[in-house]
Length: 89
Image (cartoon, rainbow, N blue to C red; front, side):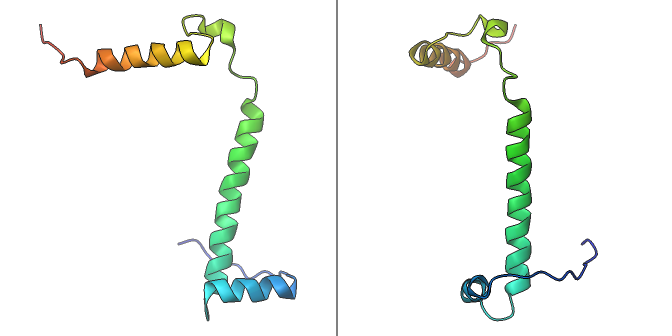
């Protein structure tokens, strides 16, 4: 477990009341820690999405169909191949 650090945080009283109702007696800190961890993960994922936007180039993948229907059929074909029993040589 990492070390804990006490930080002063000001929250609107209506938010504190809602947190207390949801978390139960004596569990406010655990609730806030979990909420903060989830938000840190969410923000990191959003940043990664923003940074990777435009990384996919269709011209680099000309072997893939360019319509949803075509891709669906291509994928089904791949799955049919994977479902076949593998023979050993």
